[in-house]
Image (cartoon, rainbow, N blue to C red; front, side, top):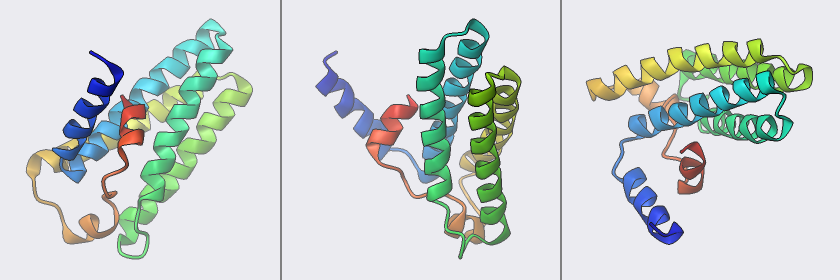
Length: 147
């Protein structure tokens, strides 16, 4: 498949998803890059670690930047704090070459992903959560990074 065809397929796939499904997809990408970063740290592969942590941080930043802290109340504020914490831990893992910190972030991401997946499967969401804690669909370019 050509790159142009692949990009068109990805755009169609993203456009057919609900906002909750897109959030789950972002978590999937973050988890994948966390695993790559973890393994790269263990192998001493600095280039792969750099690329994976960069993508992981970009996804966490996108999740955080799309929160509506005014309308999302306590849920959005809690997620904002968790995303900030995860970003700090990834940066610490990179500077200290510490795979355990990446593993901690991975566990947090897994827990959050399962919660969002449950909400997506339910199909109905509390209006407060929908108003502020569910990010609006991100751009296709970020979704392509999450793949």
